[in-house]
Image (cartoon, rainbow, N blue to C red):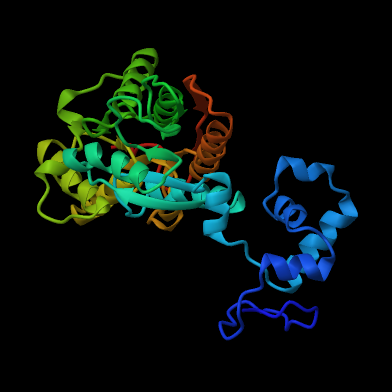
Length: 358
């Protein structure tokens, strides 16, 4: 047991040789009750009634002795786990990792633990994983680009969802605006023969984004040639491809159908970058022969060759917003559905230019 006098050696991070400092020791060191110290260190609303000098003294002592509240005591005291579950399709580079970076930062700032489960679009995991997360103590779940058939028994936030369910908030990008920005950019450069990667079946964004493409094309007088529309489909790919290979595979498929296009408007950045590799292998120059525009603005977009013009989703901000929204729902126990719309913006880089004049 740690000594209970004020001469206890100060703890240092990573020093496992020293026993942990107890709340009792800290209380005796400061001459305060354990309840007062616990209220301050757990950031309880009641702690606002404690004077600022006392609060600062407690915080400084906790830092000095590297005090860490006991997790199990915290759980038993408040009947709270402070755990959040996160469901994503996969953990590859792209949309999901950008969102997760924002989620992580916000949840850690608010002293919540989290665990991530990927479902790989498997029906059994889509059905079973939410229940498993709740059984393991999750107070809420964040669904990233993940379908949901109905409400879950804990507060939830969906990034990319549209359906209204009790206890669930939806954070969605304005897909129709993003699609219009992409097509307007290509049209402003003079492109009329435009190929398209349509999104995956089952994706919450596919139909909205495609509806935006169709509306913008009609307004701009651009004809969409069905021969130049390729729907992304993971099920037809060779075993074990990563996301960029999907764009490569369907880029080659597009070229096998026709080369009579001057631009590709891709569903996302990863498929856009994969297609760029297929186009270069076919001897096409980018962007002189084919301009390419993506959607998402993943981190890798600035390292593509040429750098990728894209529609930026504020992925980290969406992750932070999802975490804040979920924690608010957990704390207030709000059951009303909520719809939060986020606006995209275009980022013009080197992968688009005016079409070459023959």
